[in-house]
Image (cartoon, rainbow over all chains, first blue to last red; front, side, top):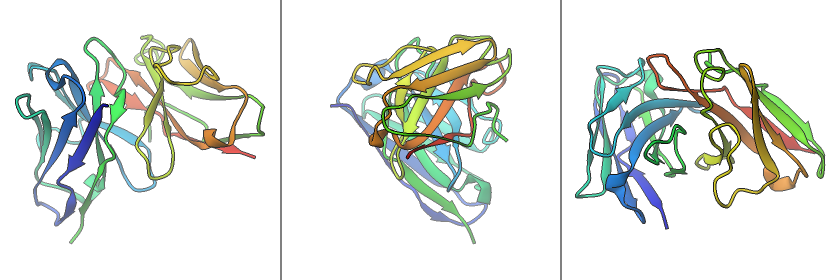
Length: 120
Length: 111
């Protein structure tokens, strides 16, 4: 069974940092690209960042470019999102999602999400 | 403001059919056959319902179908059931600096 489990969310002050993790199981993690998608409270979905299976290709939304860094460790079946210089508008539930190679959907399996709250 | 435009809400009675539209531009919906649709129940993660405009992942009911005409994609749900009540989001691959864009979401109410 495919499982994606996010962790690392919490309350952080503006300007602070947080590192999110996504633990994958039930599939060959190293064969899939991965996405981070966020959802502000009561709002819609927003794509945040993507990383290819071998980390060769990395993309960021304009809203987080220069502040967030996506990475993965295929040996540990894990995906990460390092978030620096956090702002109030980064407050959201952050989901990791799996993308099959050569596919153009955002994700066929999603984790349950982890809440990040940026507030003083 | 979302890049793709969806109606805020739609409703229908059990057994009826409804259609949710998703309007973009020639840089996203109109330029690629890479529109996908996601269902999200309150407090839950999104679920992929349609990809590449009209393809259903394994396990998704054939009551869900997708189509596209020009810059507008559509999701049709036939034989509405109570469990279909949820938020629905469209997404498209795009040629802009952000490779994926979402619609603002549509709340489906089953009367």
